[in-house]
Image (cartoon, rainbow, N blue to C red; front, side, top):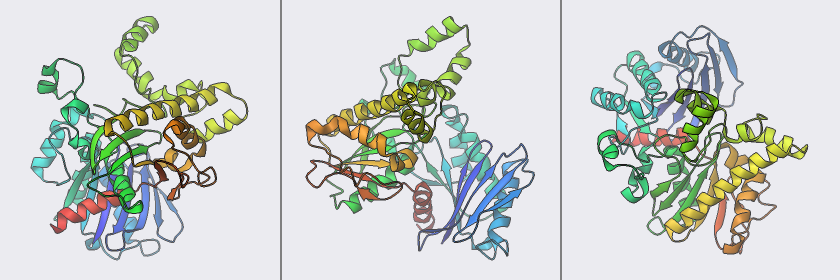
Length: 398
């Protein structure tokens, strides 16, 4: 099967065409500035990147451009649109309604719309992509893979907040967790790579990037995760604050004479390591460079990030009653040597030790702990698109 994987944002659209038999991407690409002017970046496997500047007034036009690129005689990878057997969509929030991937029909669309208040920036954009594919490729099955689904194995003791119970009953205020496709893919790969028993395993996955989350996975099921009702909770991130005293919101609104919306913008887009570094950057490569040049705020931002991550790992070791493996993934987890070292340095008391030489890698699958480390530490590059394609094939083929 050839599966087109779509990740639709409000003004962008990422895609991959994956051959399910080889599990290789035939082409990858990104549509940018949808609704503004439009740019398509398309890269066929083994070929050069092609950049096409063209008006993209909406997502349907963007997807038509993607199809045109895939079948183009010069840089395309298929001969005809009919070669696409299914489309897999990243859907951000499934609430409690969707606990696994689903074939999308009118009832599913209505359900996703129903929980859209939980992700008002993401779910509507995701559905635009779904509807565009339905219009362009009638009869081709569309599958929804939810960011939140993998975390739905959490028990109430982990997902409930200390708020009046009726807020959960009436408004579904609870922890949901995100990056589920990444946590799922990486934890399953860790079981294979480390020859762990799927029915007797304890894994902590650290998905570290501009958005970051950590999950505790016992016997293949999530028992806790750091992101909450929204992706703002948990770790300090690129521009998100992570865990804070909620009274800070009220304090800042009064002190700065700002609206609730203004303060939420600060917490979402002006905080995290970007804010801590004094505006140096939300990119850890820039922070590392600034730290090496003596910028103390940049150095502090990285240390705060690492410390918060270590605290979550420590908490999840307690929740799991031990741990077999700690896994680093995503852009930062796969590539930042300093952050991995800083995080694991907190666990020397447990006999967890990094192999300094093995840790000198970027974007490569490798065990980075010493042979005598009490817990295995490993880097596993994530592949959310492949995870979506696998889910799509499983549902379509029945």
